[in-house]
Image 1 (tube, rainbow, N blue to C red):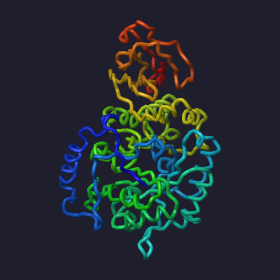
Image 2 (image 1 turned 135 degrees about the vertical axis):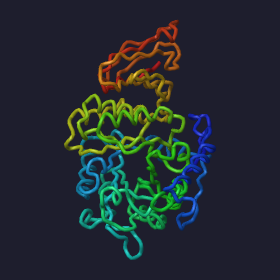
Image 3 (image 1 turned 90 degrees about the horizontal axis):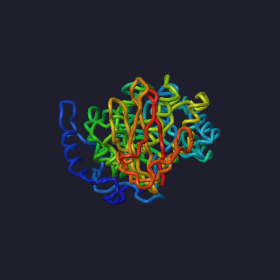
Image 4 (image 1 turned 45 degrees about the horizontal axis):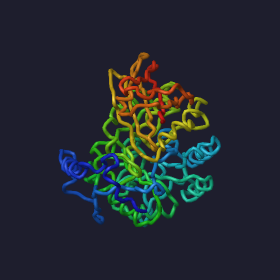
Length: 437
């Protein structure tokens, strides 16, 4: 699996300033009273952390578009995880036709392990939760035409050991990186979630080094495995993770509430400089179907993740969600924006007391536009072709949520500043448009 391929510097200015920013981040990671990373390192082969190359430039290679699928954590967290839950998710993806729309990864998150490693140091699946074993489960998922993912952590502990009181000793990959990577190959894993879990505090690790170490072990396998890393944006991974992983978390954990979703959206405004094919910012998994999100909030959540070129990982019971949630997850026009091969993440061009305008460049010169109302009251949101940095029209307009075509904008000889798009947007909602010539 080759993760490091050069990407043209002209795409999103992805490499501009990354090297210098990474040096600053590395320096900051070693400071602070809780970190011992300057004195304690993994007893394994050092790994390169070069940020001058970027994963997957070719369109036919791994993670050329943001990965889509299902992850167990937001649905069952830790103690309700078992093989039946995973099989049911795979069944539901196929039954609802989501696989045909691109949802292909079925990922088992934390709490799949026996409390202790075997005598040879290998991780073992929990016999009560996964009596058939992980290889059998991976085969089941593969037989559905889907891909199988698994969770590991770079330190000595997993997050569930720390936060969910999951019993265990040494379930993290610290000191077992090669052994655990080879386990992934033997099981038939296609996607690895590698979750930080305060490994700097528990084991004195440095994020860049620890994540690059596992990257190198994965490359040895010569098996295509999507590599998803998560350190919650604490050390600005968007500045150094390109070249290490296919996707990296940019935020703390998402909650099933509009406040959490809106906060994450606002934190992503400048990250477009660092995203592109094979190298994706990850604002965390979807929470649609969980909590008490309204239909407008569900559409805004999915739509903004699509604007952000974010991975779309479902985290709910697909057999229990409302028809409106399933319809939103299945909207082909919105998914097409998320999966646009140009890979250009949206940028925010306007923010006025919670009324936001975002624009995303698409392949072939089209534009995706989001009018997002993060306030608690209906708000009129307007933009112009000039603000969108678009030339004079005419531009055809399609509303992606209603899937209806609207009157073109910007007739010939009309100045871009005079071509206005204006909508009344309900609270916690978005209007999502596609403009094409």
